[in-house]
Length: 242
Image (cartoon, rainbow, N blue to C red; front, side, top):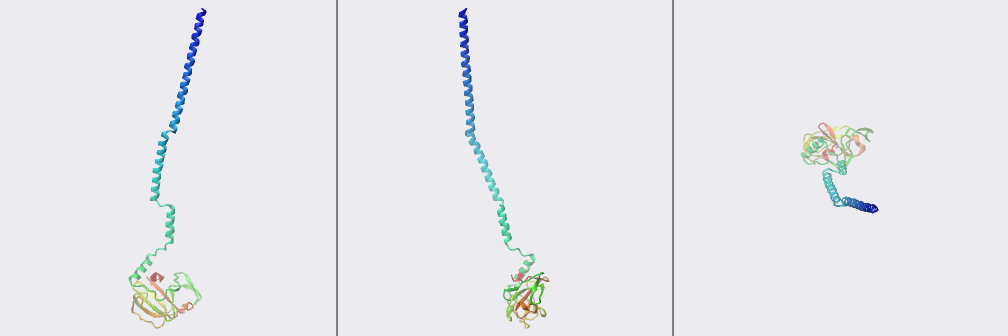
């Protein structure tokens, strides 16, 4: 009886030992599996896959950069537009169609010359009144005053025909010449004796008269008062003379 109990106790202890080792083995195996899984995850996280992803991202960035560069080349930058605008502002304003027409017609008629010196002592004022030192008032100046010495010769600015010569109470002896460019010139401040007569044809640079005085501009010294009409309206003579 006692012998059977001893054997049963041994058998139970043996089974407990086996179970312990089985459990230990399972734990070791579980730890191993967990370690491998962790290692594999770390390897995948820091491994070649990341290189591929970085390469893909780099390639996409490169393509995007190239496209941006192409688009930038096609479209001007704001700085370029600004420079273009500044350049545009710095250029002189284009002439009106009327001014271009006058200039073209004048050139078509032949050589354009200054009737006397190019020294302008009083400019064209258009519709804006300017002060007259002689008359002590304000009035429009419908021509330009070119400096000249008394008795110096006046030339025809281009080809044309003398329409009339008369004595103006304000501007003195005045010669009216209809030029081939489609405009009419008024040469004022001339001497009483002229070098051509009414209905004579004149050529560019031909001497037509000499300088004397201008009653309404006597305080400005000796000069030629040159006024030009185009289509019945006074224009700035510099549009013809250039």
